[in-house]
Length: 417
Image (tube, rainbow, N blue to C red):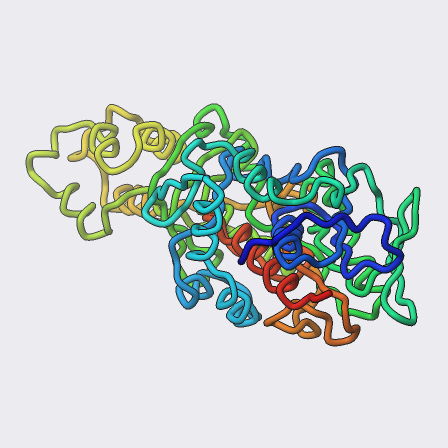
């Protein structure tokens, strides 16, 4: 993006070039681009402050993007329509995002070899970088949009206090995730009024509930596994990552990444997760049981070498085995029971967290009717949908903010005075 020569205030113009609704990362990025181009615009936000939901991301640290190139980025997504993002990421991808913030004076730190956070670990620094170059008079806070309608020469955007007229509208209102931050799914309502197909919102990147874990929380709560493997029901695919036992069920990066898959399987029938609780395979465990040096050792001591101590204790409790039982006194059948629990410990899942409490929502405006290079509606010229308002999302790790910033950039780049 180049630099504009002067600040121009457009509030009093009867016809604006653009109105952006929503001040999340996608809306703020769009405003930055329009500001640089000298296009007349207003940014309307219902809250008293901008970027309210952005403040919460990454545990308030804001994982703003990641290290992946376009192909690798897209391959990490579970979406059927993931190729939709190719053009917009080509316009403005992860490298561009890193350069954007560094040019704004925000130093980024690479963590876990692929996640970028502000070095300060403060989400506010990201918001400041996105808003510092925006003409303050172009941002209207505490401005709740009531309606968006088509006119002969553009659109009317009606708020509780005023009606604005514009050639273009960029809808950046997000999903229904964390409605207390103002994310109430308004954009989907307006999209439906413009005859766009809607994919119903569903929970993603969230935790799950299990009566089994809840009943055994005194033994399981707080147990953390750095590299757990999970299978869903009888499916062959294996998912791996960090997992945490909570007082209500399961959470952690692994669960968050597969929560939407669990959600859809629960709609069809039931879900039983099969957890691998050890880094050893079956042959290795059998070998340990057969080792002569282990025959006079208590079973609890051997299990503590195979799994987290608290899990070792729980497995024996679950199987009703005495901890002081010696390996030599355990039958082959009992050994097989232990092996089965270590390699495929079954936990029935009852529920996935509600849409409103999920970190991210899937669903939104169908991408089939959106130009993938510009985010403009194929049904209505001058109407744009960006960020989480669209039916695109990714796993944790900077994917969703990247998508927001990229789609915001692509939409605004296509808008001229």
